[in-house]
Length: 346
Image 1 (cartoon, one colour):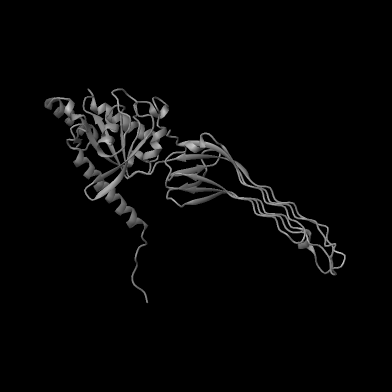
Image 2 (cartoon, rainbow, N blue to C red):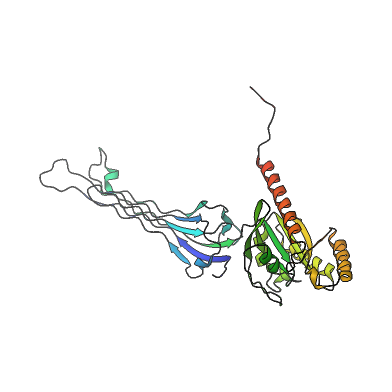
């Protein structure tokens, strides 16, 4: 199945049904009069988050969605049927924007979340609605109100606890394949990954979702390579694992290139908690590895981990480090969401 994380679609809610102009005309029934029913309400357009989707590919082949119109009123005080709603089913993490791509209409993070995007028009009143003691035979009816039409953008930001970032060919997909059941494409040339990959990692008594983001190169924020389009998928992560290829001649430059692109992208990605690791450590000799370890430590101002996804050296330690940061971040979020307890009052 193809991965699609952005789609432009057109939606329209249903128009309301017209009210009915009708009078009772039975020959042998007294007290006849107006009996025109009201029109039905037009259908609404809703967006609903469901848990069995992870891409917007359904909106690649269909871009127009319309709710049903309300039924017209009829004689004998019969009201028109309400129009059927149109429900857009989207994966968790979908954000819905107006046509300007800046005004957010909804942010659906959890399965079951719903958002009303376009309200259907109300049905018109039939002439029975307007009868009174002074107007016993009204010939007035209301038409149904029109529905709403608008263009919206769907933008998916994957829900992951941790994200793996780095230059192309830094070993991100190999790491994901080694620690989860995911099977991303792996090859010895840059830009093997053309879209994000997700995997569920189980380590000890914990499990978390790990996202592998396609590589960044210098100028990605200006559109070079695959650009920074996929960085939106790590905006919701708790921690980033920055992999630097140990076979790179200048690991410091490789590290700073990615950090500069994170900073240029914005969304406070450069302020997220970051774990740094040298990957492919089994591919170079010990002396060279020590030199590049020291260079990366100086550049990142952190003590990098040394891992090899092929031999699995250091992989388990990296996973436990990710789990610790995820738990710490969740604990801080929970503490921040709880109201402060003041002094007890009777």
